[in-house]
Image 1 (cartoon, one colour):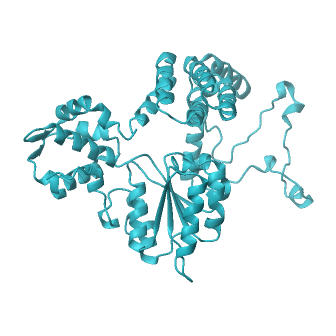
Image 2 (image 1 turned 90 degrees about the horizontal axis):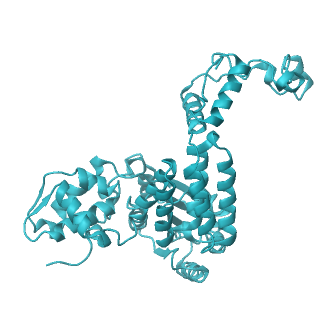
Image 3 (image 1 turned 30 degrees about the vertical axis):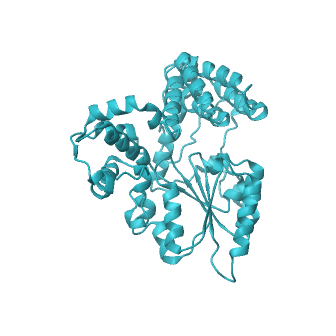
Length: 424
């Protein structure tokens, strides 16, 4: 007998031992295992892509500690609903009992006044806040609230974890056990899932539902079932992450027509225009960079404009910026340079001292010790340049920035070659 409860809901784990993925958080030494053992849980925010278990993890912690668990969705809750929950929490709190949990899904969609309404309750310990977000909290959560919360990053499930989830569903779910299901291939299943546990279970639900008798899971059956049930597959709006990915790759790939198409898909689907504007700022820095530094200025202007005017007018500066960035020359040289430098710094066991001649010398004793001695002030020389060593000992000539193959950086490369005479 079918229950009509989605497979993803039927398979929702109730304990940490049943939870799949996020071993860095729920493993034996993970912080959430310690939460359950100690009962000492600070307010925290779970940041990660859809379907990786943010809501489930919050419920597991609350259930293990047997505390009241209030939930709000940022999509349909306002300041009034927040205050009502806080008032209820105050009324149900007795003496020194641990505070109840307040779980806010998609907390990034709360505006400033809604987030402000949480501050007092979090500060006073009336509730322990658990926020879930798919967006970077440092952009979307106000600083006073963010400073009172720990942020934990959840990762997409890898193929081995998806396979564990698949096998568990096939062997433990009461409805699937009644069907004769044979797994021949999992590549398409795992690829379409994209590290999303809920998406994998939804796809499995679709494939099983499409078969009348015996069920064969292979790449063909998965692909055909999804093509025939695309509306069901996207019923929770999860595919918009694929559209966002296509938008980013179209801009990076210098296709303004595809980029505008995916921009329209996102806007028509209700995507937050501020999110799109922020992605354009990142694209301008990461993928265009020094090939056309004006792109970052334009993307920042777009970001400010979108915040000021909102939709529907925001579609115009978003389109203008998208077309300009997609049509621009591309370079990731700055992105690669900082990553090379960070990689060296993180792996370099030498605490390399800054050369004495470029150290600051604010006191007499420092000057006597040689700080700043023999430093050459570049503006005292022709072309505002004089050759001197800036790298710590052992890193002389180390190159992090490698100019890209575009007209703007050809000019940069020529100038660096002229100044440093091949040193870099």
